[in-house]
Image 1: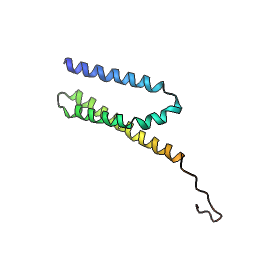
Image 2: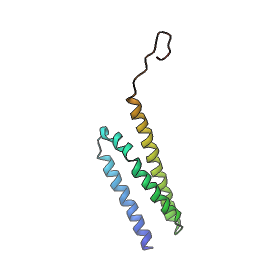
Image 3: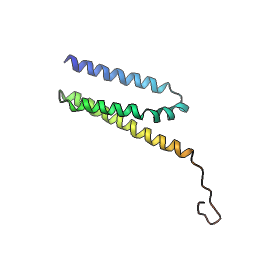
Image 4: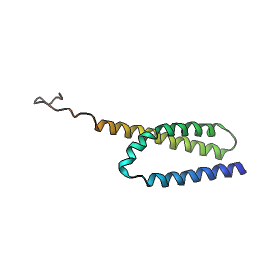
Length: 102
């Protein structure tokens, strides 16, 4: 029971610290930091899969599934934002008189 309370405490503390850190980041820095956090989220996915794989209690399994879900949302969102950011730097294609891109 003590391990369960400790795990729940760490999970709650990490959620609050993460929220506070993210809300302090200015919008201009959010996109580069989000694309850089994909590697960290990959490590988080591995850790949360390890927690989910342990069948000690149903609560730990639920918390592990929640951690996997949140980390996957972060990874996918980071890749989508990175792709959008990189598309902003591609040269614009000009249309000719016939309406086709050149």
